[in-house]
Length: 366
Image (cartoon, rainbow, N blue to C red):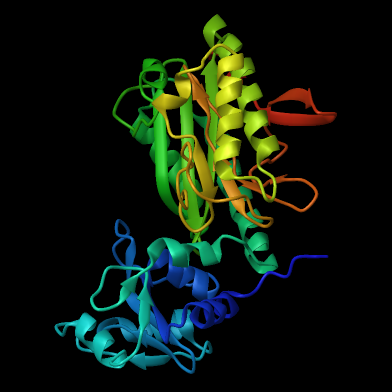
């Protein structure tokens, strides 16, 4: 039987009934986007919280935001969605207004706000399975993100700083209204020395790792690619072949009903099999994605099972090389959302299936 994926509001209604709450308060940008079908509540881009709260009760929906924000939020984000606006002055305490609307009610919240029950993780679980509309939006975003990274890898030149590579990549996505939540760039020895490298003023000589976590409509696509100028050194040549075995093992294990810790264990076993049994300790291995770069990190003995229509981004790494794509778990097989077909790939057969996983792009030295 085909799984029926409820809309966000249907999921919230079921949550209220099941847990006997009168309402839910959402302040996080990720949840605002999820509930509203991709709308935006942010001003400051470096905070998880937005400037507009959504209070969803069993019989009414409120948006609480200051008067100075309300016109734009109403006209450009929530018009026609049935929210009643409550608009304190910018100098008044919005929390007090929220509490007054909830007087005498049992409220769950995605933030810490007395006297409500903070259920951040429990509420996040409601958005793990994606609707058809969300999946379509995700496919568009993932292709934009992956193409931007791959085009950047084809266009950069030795002598550019990591900051310049970062700006080059950012310009490709920002023009489409995509918010680069994370851009990581490392070059040459920094690729080997650091697993989580933010850009610096170091100049590219031969080797670059380029990473983006790109957001639009609340959804986030995650992708990593590598480019090398001149012949690949032996260590990279060998390690990329080992890494692809770990990558495929983890992605193959990411199937509906599988405990997420078991997917992680499959990765650990393959790390050992290829001779890098301790490398998983140097970088988190990823986990479920969607409305956060990772909804949570997969850890040994951690919680959760894989759901159909859930997105994942695993990022196994060994010295000098990493793999990262965004995948969507399907009923019959998984879909690699960030596969463009325009890159260079390593072809591997496993369990009777052919896999194309990203290779290192080798470019001539001008």
